[in-house]
Image (cartoon, rainbow, N blue to C red):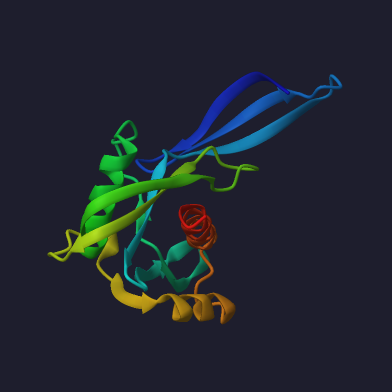
Length: 179
């Protein structure tokens, strides 16, 4: 597939929407709408058998949702992923990690968005005050046992695809550590 032309349709501090004219492999023309967003960090705070979760209202779906701490920062698209992860963890939960291990990379919605996410495991945690952004005022946090987290997925209380995929990465990482 070849990009023939691109035009920006919309932009705000968090995302940009563009429309690309394309030529497919068979020579036919088409268009593609693409949402460009910077790479984000998702953090799995783990203490023994407990996971630290955040819950907040997600405007596009009109529901409160439990998920792992995650995000990016407008104007900080070039921030080192590890630094971004530590910042997001501190902002949303107040936690500081003594150790951060990168678990992998996620493509959010590759059929419509360029956004990718780096997944980190945060351990050796210490608690402190959160530093939430204005949009995160209604955020709540909780420690959840793994068994309860899995039950929350089954009850559709955790539906965030990135959080569920990140948990699968955690399980694979742990399996690789134990033979």
